[in-house]
Length: 280
Image (cartoon, rainbow, N blue to C red; front, side, top):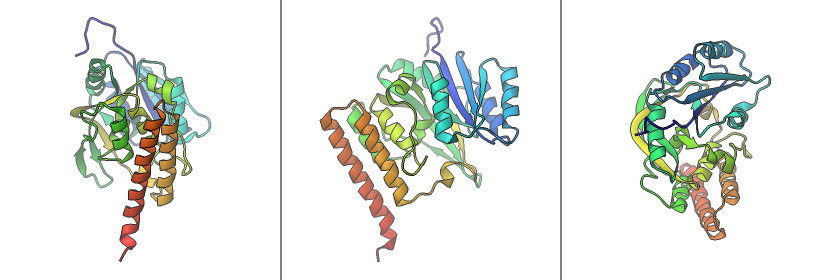
């Protein structure tokens, strides 16, 4: 557990909002209910045209930990996230979507794991997903459990083994931003931009899983990932972005070559799955 007698590291929640008046209040309430004593909530509203700003402003008047930044022109998902990362100052960061909800112990439990594991770069929990038909499912990402070698972590992330996007909902050390920067667009725009970011992050340290359901992901008809165009061209663009992250990493040339081979194999398997329905 985190020692009550030492100073608590500063954790910054990065909340990107846009036209979320129907649900953002629940997200804000779950952040306000966090039991961790040194939390800052940084909100960046991406030029909403509904009452999202008013709802967020109400939170800032009630809780000194909440800070609201407003964009006058739309930046988009990646632009808004990167603005938050460039504005945040702290020891640890995490992203939260404006329609998701955290358990009160989310920050405390994940930070305990990170503080106890100096070699870890990120900690994440199991999640509950609620789809557009209100179906609920508990999901866990176990593909990196116990894997200490960075080349193996990245290999599995490149292959997208398991529910690879769950760690994006975790807490990571701020040094990761210094090393990687923010998320990047690719030839398909914002499509799957969290994948190459997680690939690079997996090269910086271990991913530690907390086997508790501490994050609730709510899918809505307007959810970003549900409206992406899942074509072979889009996946090729995301694959190229992963190759770019490998190139930018501090791996040895040999390690980079191994991962590029792994990535090529992953894309070939993607093509096979895409073509399979057309094969008679």
